[in-house]
Length: 341
Image 1 (tube, rainbow, N blue to C red):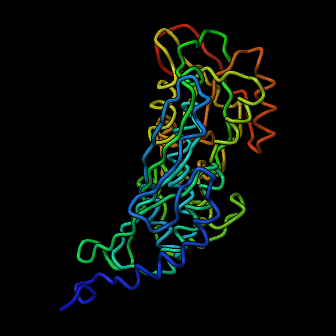
Image 2 (cartoon, one colour):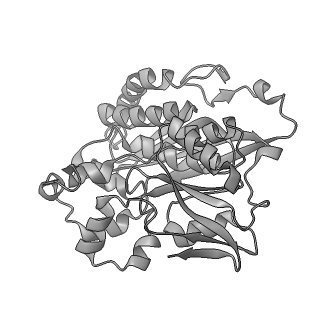
Image 3 (spheres, rainbow, N blue to C red):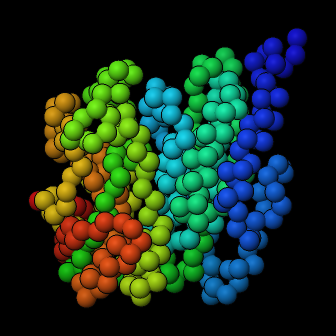
């Protein structure tokens, strides 16, 4: 008896590391110390010495059951973008710059090519957000997971000067809400998605004119990363007073998190285009509108609040970063919460 016969292939683990190295190297920043393969990832903080009061920000998350779609489609090179996006968007939402990221892959069996594909997506997400991929772990769990199953999660660290943190404390009535278009469902609500649509390869490979792609392709579109858009707003000299990353819980849970007591957000549902995948979900699943907005991002992945006088500059900055902005509402005095109208 040896470890391989017990279900853990150490040689496959070595090969996975070799295959992923080319992707990891693309994400390196000057602050990264050492290379891949150490017991820990090292990152120099010398560059933040100029900040008056540096604050570290962290985020950890996974892709939820969206991973099941990747497994059914046998497409693994974009799910890593989702893992990174869910972490770095939270950091950017607080006003931070993502510095580095670590991934954790649990699998039933280590298939080096598949693991390398997953890490390729992680590296792409790091490139999009400017974070370095400084480490990770691939763990085989034979007997606990099926050989073709895996799960993916990650952890990110960022930094900002305390004075530049986005806290919502200066929010006031009359401030404008700007929404940034999502790329689709992102990484939340897939347990409901998988109940609405048939989770069979034939159904996922069906092409829909309204989607412009197959159902499976629409469901696997990676989560949009908004780090560059938020940095562009800052570089334009605009202060983001409050920010909400629209993730699990949709509008009703996430928008109030950006508000201070005594303020409410008023959002107009017809102020931006809703992607057709959400219309399909609502129709095919007979899902009530309130539940749709309480589960999904409904086409907006990030919402920021700015002074009315800064709205045009903020919109221009978001477009310059490659994102699509929409003025979707405003802030009013009232009980803390969100009103959709």
